[in-house]
Length: 360
Ligand code: G6P
Image 1: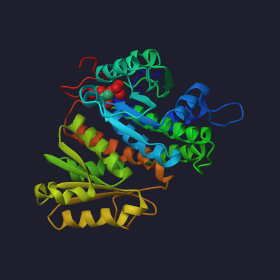
Image 2: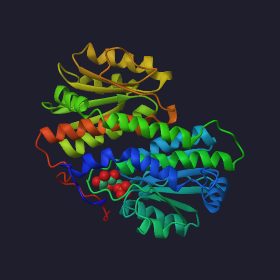
Image 3: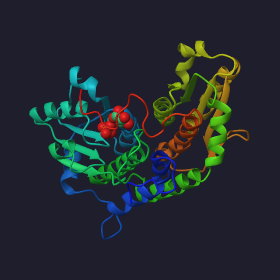
């Protein structure tokens, strides 16, 4: 059943492996009889009526929101802001005339998000929850819900729920563009199917990921992740995964920001994992890598076809530039998993963390 580990040593590894299936499942669930993706009319209308979208989330779901903003702004051309729920709650930014609030929450129970939703409802603003648990508090209390259909996620560190959230955001972006009468040239159905296949290829390269964990992370106190544009959001998620389950101090940085402070921390052997999936910033991130390598960093490069070099450690088959986060996170999840495993950590139940944080 969904909630059994079967032959897997850990739920986390099982859930990483389930990701291609989850994406295919989502595509099936959101297709109509004509095999077209179409969201419910009321959600379309709410989207169309809003002049600005406010995404509210915490943790990994916040990282999905950052990617969702990029997709929605680029595909629909509507402004989107992404906020950490606990920050928005006590320091609300100025709102537009007709905001639409989107809550992203695997559990649908995160107290920080609920606090914002209560205020949003009191102010009369429309709300949509993207969640893996349709009967959850955030789902019941928001005006609309989109279900991520990822199946129960048991491991505390979120993997398949994150990629499912981004798939839903891609669908939302495409549908919103159609509702606005535009042809975006972004066929979410087609592009997500390709992404699911690429995820599967990456899940099949576990031995390579284990080797990378061995080469870079078995014996270190810290690790830096760098990326630009979409990749910046993904490396923040990669660093969060590593922190959560291996307790290695890790941070994800915008490549160009390193020289403004963090490069002071690079020493002989410091692991730096760089991600390059976006052709327009490939040369920039390569330049940032040279800067850290010149200071002794132990550099690992994960790239995508089109941006790759012969000696990159991982080369991901090409997907649509808006969907690179869905596939690029898979090697980062696996590398974190093997780092934690070999450091003897409790992968599925890391210390100090809860799957769902229902208190503020
Ligand atoms: C907790 C979990 C994280 C999760 C965050 C938000 O901190 O440990 O993995 O990303 O809550 O959870 P949500 O259910 O709202 O997505």
